[in-house]
Image (cartoon, rainbow, N blue to C red; front, side):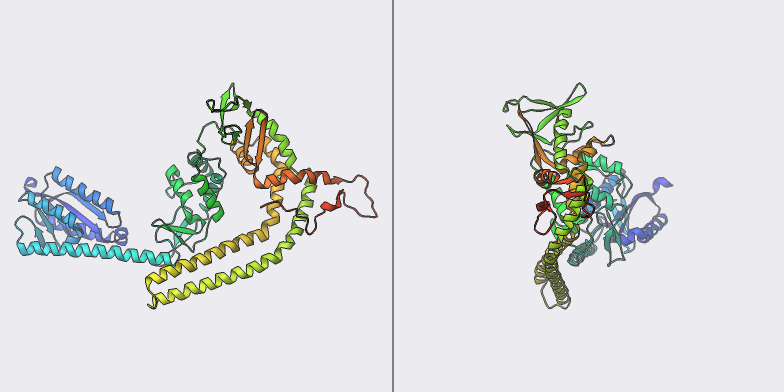
Length: 529
């Protein structure tokens, strides 16, 4: 009895993500088609479900998979609810028609429309088939056009029209969804950018470091190298959004600063070779150059110790091999030269920076007022052109042009305002932190708990690079520590403890021997930014 049954496949298709999630449309189609098969002595070998939310490439792959299964199992019947549930483009319709013409037994039944396509289909029925395929194609094209219009409007409002990257979550109802910072993931994202900006990590090394730190993707798994690279390249994290290779202003809160994002892009696009992952990483890898040829010093393990040398033996005459411990011995006095002698010097320094900072407040206040006025004006203009667009007073092209112009103006003013606010509150704090780091640099480096990565990170804060020659090692400081190397020795020699204090004078136990360096207006004790 079963051998006489016609073999068939059922194809169910949903036309929206909402239908797929609820499962109602798929269940309804399957039930209808299965009942039809039972009534007509049809044996269903397989049921296929196609999601319209899948990409076109995925849908096409599924379509060819169905045809291969049909041909492999000599199936002569396809069951679908309606024509638009089977195909929505002329190419697929042509393939189905070719399959029908291959064998007189091949048929397609559209159950809900009570319509059959076969070799015996009459001319006027074929015309109906062609018309319905064309209508289904129009529906698909129109749907795509409406989706693109919705995405464009969403972008114009300052919101990403799709799921945000790791570090953000989506809130709100359909049509009103926005993105906010994921407080659980955001700290990992920020640390990921900060570590890469140091120049001490390749993406491979950073993957492993961030996994140990606790970073996981939304599935709870390890973030891979290519995905991490995408994160580091995504301007969404600094308050912008990229869509179709264009960057637009956005309203969501940033996890990192624009400056940090730009620094990371600079590191990612550098011309020289990026740090490569090694299980045993030398402290001074990629941090020292040859003064003669400019090449990077190579580090090798010999008898349990790291030795550095120039590897450009064909073009360079330097034959110096330097042990890592020797390099450290040379650097330790440099740390001492950068450091204030005692914590009391730091206290004097902090007071001086605060007092000198008072000169900046008046200037900053005037800038703040001007920038706030620019932001308010740009915002009013953005609201006005949006209303004009809704009322049809301006063309879409004019709206897009003015939207970019006013958004750029607002973003520039906002960035400037943010920098001034940070400088207004953190100027002296940053200067103080630099000096405190200089004071504790040697202690941090020599700490038993300091890992190789800790030491490399410390070195990246102090030295832009080191140069090796036959005469020895020449340090090239970062901007802030270059300044410290010049004036901290003067500061240390100027401020000296007073052994015999005049009680009547109520002098401090730590006073300057040269009053000209007292912290006062115009003394310019501030370090470079």
